[in-house]
Length: 164
Image 1 (spheres, helix red, strand yellow):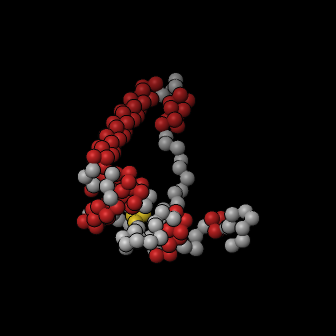
Image 2: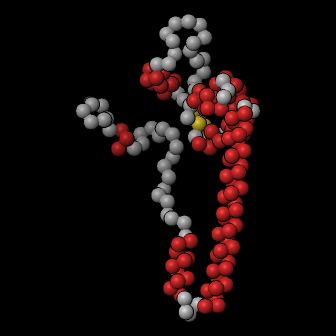
Image 3: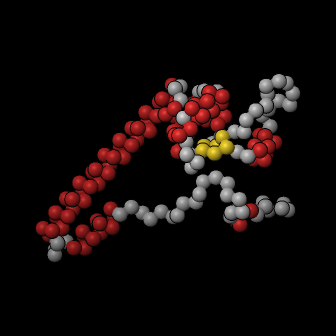
């Protein structure tokens, strides 16, 4: 998401958001955020046409930042608006819940081992099926976030009916 969109979401101005990013630069590694190039910002400007054509102070002086989902969550921790504080609290609660689920999973695995040792011969097939259900599903390999020059051939194709 772009800085101006996240500023709106968190109830602050883009200027305030970018100030906090600069003050807390160590919290935003390259996989959390990056700054758009002049060309990318120009393409965005022509597509969304939100700026008024005349008048002082109507154009951005600086190139916008783009944030990944991790960067958007980190922003909630450095901003002090009510919405950002609420979002940060929700993230902490989600991690606490996740930890509880993991602990419960470990306890279940321990109990299953105990039962398996006690009744191994009689229920071998049942224990094997339960063990397979406890395994997390295999996820496909993740792609890098952001624009990758010279990358995907499939995404380089123009839409149907348009020449490149």
